[in-house]
Structures are given as structure tokens and as C-alpha cells.
Image 1: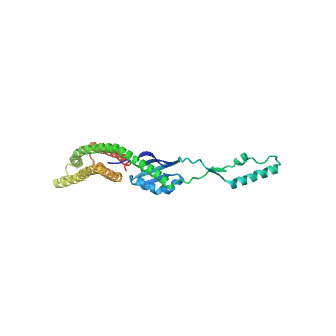
Image 2: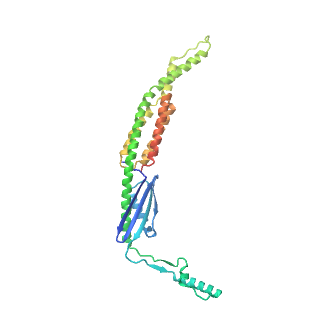
Length: 298
């Protein structure tokens, strides 16, 4: 079953007092590439996170965002930059003395210095942190895979219907194509009639029937699209087989679309029938819709 490359999933996992929230989005991409937005404490886990995701996903741009919450019962700790505080106090004192002010610097004035007091960095248990992060990433990645599969089912139905349309239209092309040699032969005879009509009746003009047959055969051969039609039927069969395979199908289907387009162009260039030309245009239009859908397949 085919998979879509666009999907979204999120999951949370707790380990002890640590909770990790993982959000994953995936978009179209020729390859598997990552955009990780991790808190500083999760930076060491970057490669491991990629391994977890790449175990389920083969193509697409994967964006991962992780948030960490520490629900430990310890009170929030803060620390003061005493060097900055002392320096700031000295400057305030110098200003007071220079301006001959009576009151000295107050605590509120000292605390007005930016970044003087900051939250103290907590030491988080790396094992607990990784257990929460890995669990959240694994759950979100699995949900993302399920969503991509569900979207893939919709893509499968759409592509199968469009491939049925191409196969049905191809039967009509095949019927019309059989008339092309007759059309070319008729045109050849009409052209010869016009040429001979312009020649003076006193001139003896004789058309070699063998030569005429050869020219007609050459034109028939140039207008024959039976090989292209045979290859198109083969492409349709292979397209369906690829869709039903368990491998990553996007690249293979995209290659087959190029082959379809090549055969359609060849038939169009050989078409000597307005109806046939119109059918080829309809087929190429349908192929373009398939191409757009295939770009979204893993």
C-alpha cells in the first residue's frame, strides 16, 4: 500500500517527573531529511531521534519539535550574578557621591540591573529524559506513519481510478489508430490526383503501382502506433504492480509517468486524425493530474 508524504502527529510521554511533548510534521521531499527543533538539554539525542524516525519513514521532509516539562517537587532555584551586582552597586555609589546625594543605592535600584537574577540550571537525569523523549518520538512517529498510510489509501483509490480511465481511453486510441494508415493512403492518392491533373494531357504520365504501394507502406509504417500502445499497456500493468508493492513507490511511479508521457507524445506526433489528437490531449491532461498526486507519495 502506498503512503502519503504529508501528515501530522503529536504525542506525550512521561518518565518520572519529566514529560516530553513531540510534534512531527512531514512534507514532500525527494529524500529523507530532517528539521529538528530541540531544547538545549535534548541536543545530545539528535542522532538517536533521527534513527527512530527513519525506521518508519523513507522519504519526506520531517520536522520535529520537542518540549520538555519538569514537574519535580523541588522549588524553583535562582542564582544571582554577584560580580555584576557588586559592579552595578559601585557605579550607583559613584553617581551618588558625584551628585552629592544623601541617600545611597537601594536594593530595588540594584535589582533593576538586567539579568542579575536568573533561574538556576537544574541537573536533569539523562536516563529519565531520554526515556520520555524516545517514548514521545516513537509514539508520534508511529502515529505519523498511520496517518500517512490513511492518506495513502485515498491516493491509491484516486490513482487507480485515473489509471482505469487511461486504460479505457487507450482502447479508443487503439481503434482510431487502425484508421491512420488508411487516412495517409487516401491523402497520398488525393495528392497524386492533384499533381496529375495539373500536368498537360499531352504528356504521358504513368504512375508505377509498385512505387505507389511502397510509398503507401512507408507512410503506414511511419503512422503505426501499435508499438507505443503495447508499451503503454505494459506501463499500466507495471504502474498497478508498483502501487501494490510494499516498497517505497514514489520514485518508481514518477519514472513510469515519464515513460507514459514519452509514448503519448509519440502517438500525438503520428496522429493524422483530429479525434485521435483530442484523445491524446485528454490522456496527457489526466497524466498531469497523476503526476501531481505521485509527487506526494513516499
